[in-house]
Image (tube, rainbow, N blue to C red; front, side, top):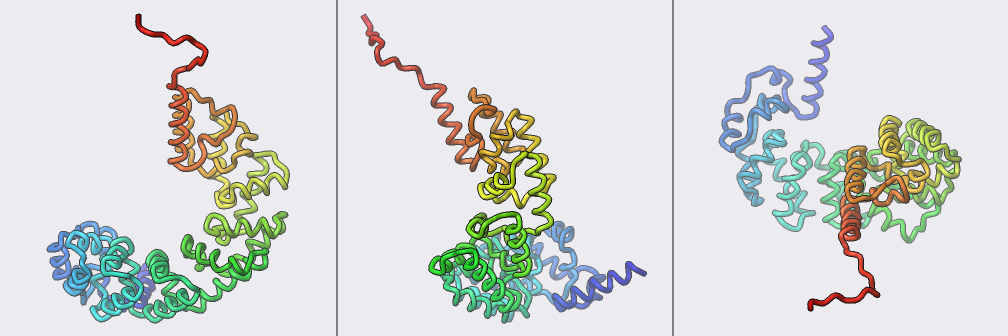
Length: 371
């Protein structure tokens, strides 16, 4: 009985989202759709495994979808890849596809730009028909914020959820972010640049609620962070701090302080140097502390360079072993050599290698010549 009820609820949800009849979920595959996709060299087995329900639908618009993609300049291989990755594309009626193409071309400089977006984010282009009004309104909203067409296109591609909901929801969160920025001491002159950078780096910040953001900053304020320090956290790491919950942060801060045996002011400074510390769970931090300490690294070293905690245990172990092969003992001195990006680490290794292989030169030694 419960299974039947669950199936019925799922059917109704699919019908609401896609306009399909629930009975089609139990029908045999649409042989015409399967044949059309096979002719395009689409891997039907993968679709059956991951999104088999698509192959049961009728009507489908394989020919029309392919024709539209070809008019944009997409080649057969790319079309095959898109339909394999996002077979729901064949369920979009031609009229809706044309409307989507016109909408995206109002932002893209050329067909080739749009093709690149479809290749990377097919689900963002092949959306539900009833989202298009929200898309139009949100495009206008973001442009009125001063974002150029290229950035708006990037936002709609990478975070389509922001464009499928009402513009009022996005407007509410943007206003909350601006208010928080100013309340923490941000400069109104710089606010526009800050907001543009934030939305470009982390468009998902708009999916959070103003209440959740206020709870987060209220918690951190109670932990002793000043307004200027909270502004630093809001402005760093794509403002991910707006996405955190007080309960999880409390556990992380408590564990970090106990492990490092540091004072409250010291803990706050560590967080300001490494804001990502707030994000990691206790389990993740436990593994990373254990990895560092088992390698002979001391707690004072970690406190001096806390951003080393952003590295996975695998990366830390690899880098320590590589430095050891160059004769460097990571247990002494700073952890900066194992810190940073892959490029930073390779540059550090290069300097160590050069130092090890460079012959010793004595400026007062006599020059040896052949007799």
